Length: 487
Image (cartoon, rainbow, N blue to C red):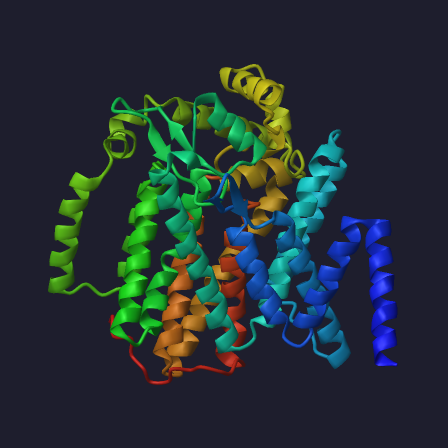
């Protein structure tokens, strides 16, 4: 009887695959993921996070690169979300709808209203749907990260993926087959090909090989590493063996090298601020031995730095002469202008690029050229400032909601840090402290990047939002009374 049932089901699946093609295969894989995640939806969160962060890495194997399909993350995420919802409602669990959840839902609703008033809403709506995926990921994550073990594992997944991205970035710098140059580089960025771009701007000693690490652009790799590297302090504290700590230290050095090889001024400016905040919060304690080691490392690093990095990033006199700096200032001026013209509703999410496309400036002319000849999508064009982006596209109301969301994330992390310290849990107090620094890194990066659709900050903010519940209700690994050796 069982064999007959298996044969019937097999024939039914075969017919479905023939009739529906890839959709049927995707449905079968999605159903399999759903069943796997049904008992432990948090496993779906881990796998979705890995697929999201590593889907841009293309390893040169044989004649063509091998990479994870981007659709795998979406399929896995939908299956995990469905498994969590089924698990929640079938067991009678309550949803935890805190202020941060209401804030992101309010922002999503308000931005949809703004798009509905736009004449090009059909162009903008896909970007709103894309953001809604991150909102769903955020809500899903803060519900399944309900124990200390789960939150710890989630953070380790993030820092491990960042380490892999750093290694891939070094490979991009060393392997010409993973590099673009000239117009081909701009075309590659437009088409989504994730290779390093040889950028000649601001250098006389040769083009800067700006690595991406699988993020699509050097700016996004710098943004990702700046948000994740503070968490390496926590990762280091959880390693109990010498080899384990040496491994984390080596990964951090690789990530620092990758950050340098983005050749971004963002990486240096925000990187210095992040280090200062870590020291101010005493998340990292300086000893005379460490100060001496740091001084020697900086001296050696100066001679190892690429000449293009010194010219483009460290020489501040080049900033005022940089074409990219002038273009960004112009973009930000227009974003401020749009905020004044549409102070309440904004011009709609993802509306800045299409609107700036019609302006009469040198930068807008360059945008039109890139759209016409290189296939760039103006929807992805932004003012290189997160706050101006939100203000221009979602109005003052949307900006206030987003600022409230950011402040709540900082408050959650700091409140959890105090709670863990009161309970004598130094290890998770350190996690809360480093998450605070990661959120502050986002705040600083927001001054230079329009990062609404970047996945890493939604992940870090989800961990920060989960902290208060874990501090008061979560069980699992406690590390009670342990004092991290780094301190």
